[in-house]
Length: 344
Image 1 (tube, helix red, strand yellow):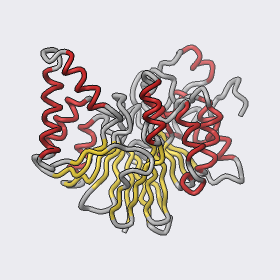
Image 2 (image 1 turned 180 degrees about the horizontal axis):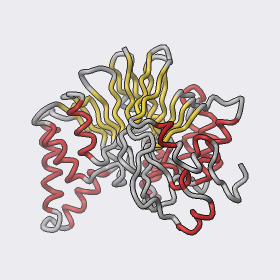
Image 3 (image 1 turned 135 degrees about the vertical axis):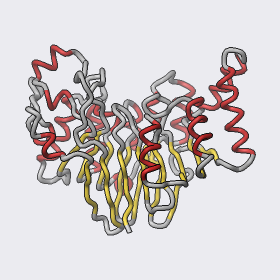
């Protein structure tokens, strides 16, 4: 038996499916729901055991109204056991409704629908904080490493916005195989995660790079976290046409240096879509500002990890990956990126 981890090509966003068997799946984040639905239909999945929405940003969470539409349609054909909503998203939505019911009528309807499902025990709603609500199914275990309950509460009480700092970090283990899904963790959240997690919690075979290849101001904390994880493969879910400059060359530099370090395990890193750093020189990128490529282009496309309980795993890409990157002038995963003034 194997467990599949599938990183869907949803642009500069996340939608991940964990499939330990043919009967049910766990979904992490919901961007571009039609792509997820197509995958589920192709696999003939009817049972979603759990949905984790790591935080409220639209590249991970479709809005409460769109979420309810998705759930309503899905429940006509299958089941959803448990749903993890972003921190306080229901409470904040309820406050909006109370402030102006006429303005937020569709939102009120969505909240009522969620409450109906809860009352009828059709869906269980949970909060995701460190140590809470672990998921267990056979050899598959999913635990929450970040945020801690008090850290999340402190952040929500004192910081406006910056939801990335409390985005949910998941540790997915299947026997001796481990993957860490870092959502969009950055800022103080990065530092907190490094400090609170034990070394054995962080060690992993696969790591999903946070925030689609962004490089936070506290980049040293990200570098430290990736070194502690010491993964064999890094996966980047990134969009070719993004307007944020992703993947930032500094991040590719960190990955390239770790790949070249004989004392580190990193053997490869792979992106769902092509990045401007792989296509354009440093000078060309400078002229582009933060603009991405003119058209979306798959690099690896859909990325599938087939994991065994022994810890062995293999990588499958939707595209002929080697053929795709052979067309790029500066493929980062081959160490050819033009870093310009960034010393490699």
